[in-house]
Image (tube, rainbow, N blue to C red; front, side):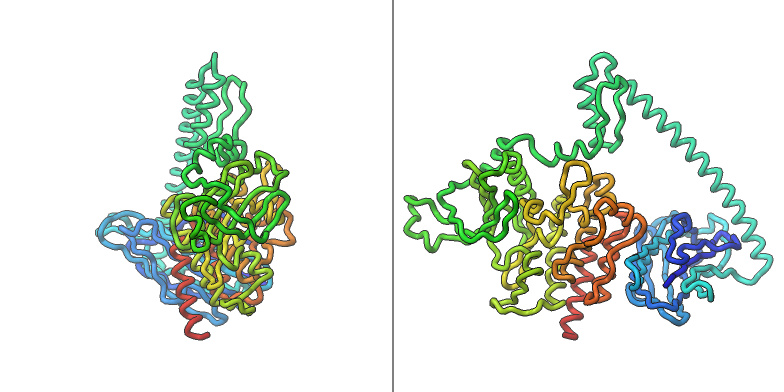
Length: 553
């Protein structure tokens, strides 16, 4: 099975840019930005395929003050038609301001017989001017057309006027040479600026006593600009983000953590341990109760005041570092309040730390999906697709709240969610997850266990964690829900993940997964962070799908 997509350049060149041929993506062609003249407001696209191929589409305007968000007259996701069909994309200027605005046509194509999800970002620049301040190339129409040798072909058909075509070719050649000149000028400018910055960074270092000052300055410079320069005196080892990461995310000592948690500290005598729910090498998770201390004024009311709690703690043989990590990880959601979040409730700090959270009856979502699958009212039943979508919607609600609070989770997965008997879901921190779910974490030679198979490419390579990397992890979480807790990329070596993802490969559609859900997963796994949907968009799409399921089920 193969798919090919090509495009005939709007500058009047007679050749075609081939985007995809035999499942190979021509990245140079995809990156090419095509201009759309001022007087063209509609792009007519024609496509077809001989195979069963599904798509999802996203249309984005980089400046909605000048150019409205493009619209299309077909569904944003569905199946590529097997007969030649035409659809339209409207690109209209607002008239409020003038300028050249880039807009993007993102097409995600999934082919069932492979694990390859191909994402194409076709970029265009629309000229929005009220008067003819620029020469108009021609009144031509951009289309998707079909040819026998390629299932799907994107092209542009000019008018038949020969004189006009000659004018187009002459004008496009001029634009081409002007563009080449600008490119070389830009390269020279970047080189000069880079050399100047290098000169200034070396000059500002203390040549005599650079020990502490150079290290501190480098750290500040690293945090602000993500640029890593070796000090001129050569006394310090090159600092990269991997070496900085533990210092940033883990507090310096347990005493600092205890001071941070002092306001929610309680005495251990109020805690009663119950059944053990989850257990790792050194981590323990219990069901328990929280009550007033014996001898307090409310002791007589202890039966009515007791609360069921989830208890996380460390075994007696746990190290001080493990205790510190437990407290640090438990602070992720501290002080946040949302119905779909499970922040830390209390902590007992004497001796081995004990961390308390509100208790939800069905417990850990991953364990529930793999083992329990108990329905409302303690009835054993299969979880419906509608239930799974409802769980996913709740995750988006919690993540939207975290986004507003500028909090990046970095470890969003079913193992870090809990649910109650009514399928109400709460997102938790990742305290003890590395120990209790060790097969979900891998060390890639940097002495840190990370959830490699849930991480976006930029997080794996550059340690960049943003809301967009959380969106990637959400796509994997969706896959976990549909497969009832299966491990993603089960047969793939963690060390091969980066090359695998950069080559365009993704997980295949599970056999019981609706096309709508798989389309959302594919969008979450776009290689570039800016090409992934926002949690608000995911929430809206899932809500619409949930409503549709309510009608038909």
